Length: 396
Image 1 (cartoon, helix red, strand yellow):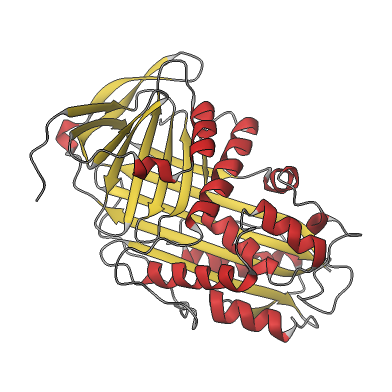
Image 2 (spheres, rainbow, N blue to C red; image 1 turned 180 degrees about the vertical axis):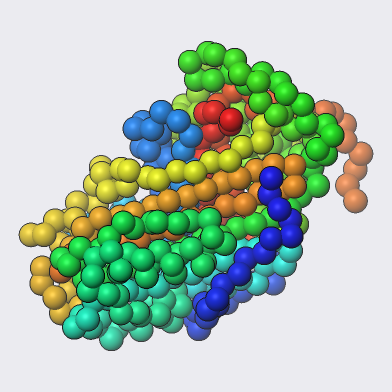
């Protein structure tokens, strides 16, 4: 169960970006649409290689890559920007947008949204001033020296991640080999409460798995805030006690989570909100679930998305990061969790980029039943930035 009384605690609270501006109300971030495209693309690719549940934080992966991008030049930077879906934004606009998202997250009332970044370097490696200053000013990413010992270096970074994800993300890295000189890390933690479901209304009901087998799961019943109904899916929006919303997207007929993701890729994630009906009473039945996922194919996914040079020892150009040659991305580690129950939701993720070298009365009712594999999108509603995306294939 999501404990409403548990709060995010950080033994060393991250400073907010000095260049970040938190809006007092809703201001759509320039990153909202790019992160929607980036996240759906990654989710679709991960879904192909994973048989079970999948949960990712496109925001966490994107933030870590955005910091890395500040050290890239030439074709390496061009490929990264294309894969990250930020071709329309220049470096200044990207950094400013991230600074504002981070500031807006930390200013949230009610719900807890924490986004933290850091840069870890080996003894003797000095990030170039411009690279370090930009990531400090726009991402509040301080620079820490990591141990020469591979295991101890991982322990240092893992401890930092665990503290900034409410203890939910552990063992992100197993070791940092001597060849790896810099590690850029992002951590995101979200906790929000809602009043949509009563525990007494939860009862065991059948859920149809991908292979057609029916299993009994604790199915929650309550009213959502809005719904989007299309030929391919029914979607319900659950608002929380802060600027956090969860879309529950249930495929119809012969549709699957994968085909629904393809539809959303064509229409844009914003189509959920654009087509939403908030005048109806929306009855939602959905299972409790606890998802935990370690991404195995992020590097291959990004290569397939056109980001090739960054991973090549011969072609990578990170000359704006540090005076070390060659310097390339050796690996990307990503872990995420998403827990949903009657009391609310909790989500956490971490990413490490490892561098080597009153309304009118309702007129109708809509019923949405998540009793088959479905998709979830958790958004920061004051910026429209998608923080987490998931495919729930088996909620048990």
